[in-house]
Length: 99
Image (cartoon, rainbow, N blue to C red; front, top):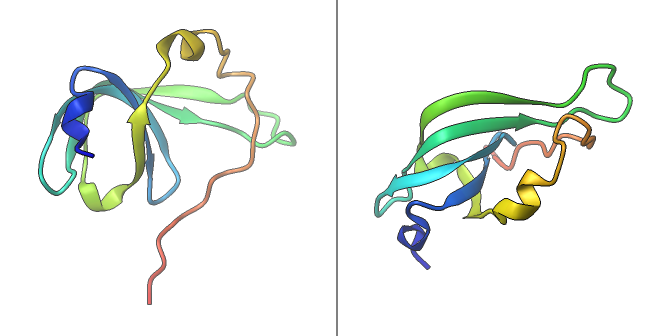
């Protein structure tokens, strides 16, 4: 399935290094390089961390295709109902396996 079906939709991207990005997909190409607008990075803290989880605004954001692990549509109604500063969890970690 091509990511072009998600153009102008809100998507969530998990990168190879475990970052979580949410934004509107405005462009993609044949090697899965993508451009997101209104991008937010969600930084989820572990339960034992005193700092709250946070969302960092990045605006227009380019992600190279070889850095994308997962990309899919966001249920915007559900997404808006969640207070992301209160969400806790362990880091995803990297999916890169250098040989």
